[in-house]
Image (spheres, rainbow, N blue to C red):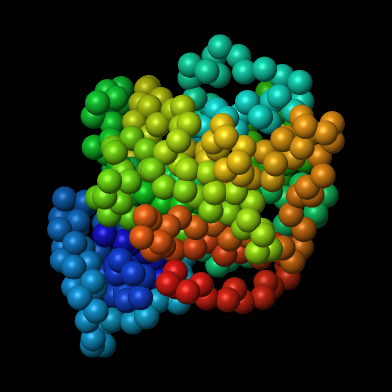
Length: 341
């Protein structure tokens, strides 16, 4: 099933069930007020939400059903108790390090990088990327993330996937020129990570069919900047640390609460012909090939589009479609994407 959160006069929005084709939705007021509430009582909520989802797919009519406008949607979880982001694709890490003359260490090959980011206010799929200065090196990072149920500490790898409740598409906005100074101090990202944006809906793993094997999502992630294709690497290819491995790493010494969002990092394939999912990686390829980077980071007025389509060409999560704006300025309304809301 597909779940989202409609904006209202609360911080967490109203939980919605959205049809497979993203053309019908209903507020699940009779099941749970918010997605977090549903995750907190998943065994009760999930079958009732599934009933609504099956009804949504029958193209129903009536006052409770509406055509979703994803400009009016929050992230599926507008805020979360925890946001963890990893580097599950070593092709990305290796390229970026090679561009600055560094090699992958043994530790990086054996254990995933992971940090805890800000989760108090995520961006919706059409919300602008508001940044104070272009000099900060504004970049996108297209990635997939898992929304988890309760995970016990020390969970075993063979049981880890059981705790994946939903999968979602993300844009982990990074301010590249602020990264070196922060990391040089020996701690992690704070200022160099702007608000993360998410797709209109999150989907249960079964919704992906054969594209979900319990470890990876075997579908391409397509990224456009100003209408020009940046890349479409396949998320199921060259994923060094899969979702169960990332869950095991995150829960090694502590429990993870329901509603934890766990990102797998920038999707990246070893084959450069697939393109890239962030500008930093494109710049790294240019630096290695020609000695300098040619592609600029994002500027005010640029538009970023990120989407995943299934084997039949249907949008899985709906599109992330954001304009980069100077902080304090309003973005232009995004054009609705056909078949993606």
